[in-house]
Length: 207
Image (tube, rainbow, N blue to C red; front, side, top):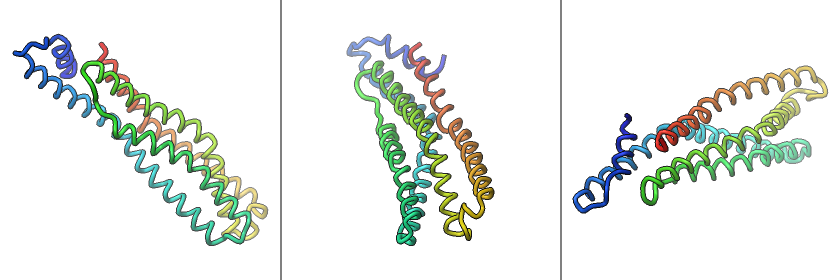
């Protein structure tokens, strides 16, 4: 039997008599610490993704803002830059909101119901962002990749996409393949595994 199981069993069976108050309080504090530590361990990969993704989005905003300001007189460049920025804003908002709530999650109330509520909330928050991420990236990645390729060819290749359509298509295809390959690996590391670990932890406690 795991330490979590032992503490859970002891806590549920302990009676609130004066002689056992100190022991029960110790077990409650220890159980809270164990659960919180294990949840933080399982969600660490997801938070690594959060900081990497947030940094990447800041770079995207900075780059597109630079292009927008520098080439403001060019209508096509201006519109593409604004579209690129607009595409990422909803993703950034949801990312910040979900992970802020995960980071602020705490064990509240009386055990054992508070532990179940805490584990369920952490799982639901992470899982809801993961579902949003998978759906939104179906639009975000193809469109943002297209914007990037068109802007690069428009600004740095004489004649742009019209002059080299095959080159632009090859660049776009390679960009999509590399992005989806990286996303698939990142999803497995930062979401699928942590979510499975949280499900196992929740199941372990509910047994």
